[in-house]
Image (cartoon, rainbow, N blue to C red):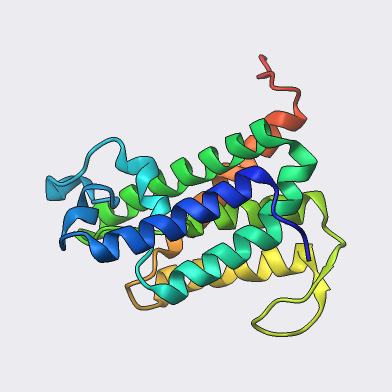
Length: 196
């Protein structure tokens, strides 16, 4: 039961606060901050980050905040605030970019919201850093090593993205994992690019 370090706490408060605020404000105002597909004409650059702080409903918000607390708290303590923010930023941005490519390819005009891309980036990071840590997921409630949990969830997201119904941004989740993976590889290489 990890306590809430400052960045994780602030992010959770911001997400909950914005969720409540946009429920009170005039309908449609949140649309300026959702991630709209490029061809809709509603896309603006700031949406590459602002979409992650908005949520569609109470359950969407609850599960994202639960995951942020479960995985983000320990990663923030391990990395410190600066690296933790870098990881969140990389996951949010890569999730947005993958989602924009996907919506362009399928011709979707629906916007995307939610911190799930960042959460999946944290999940992959947790699995890479603590592969043998035993965790108890909510679904299914079976103890398993983190590396297997991450692999199962990643595989399910890919399958549901290809064969599942619309309404959930599965490829944004995978994009968040991709951003986290690339950033961890960059950090492990010492932040240097290799030249041949």
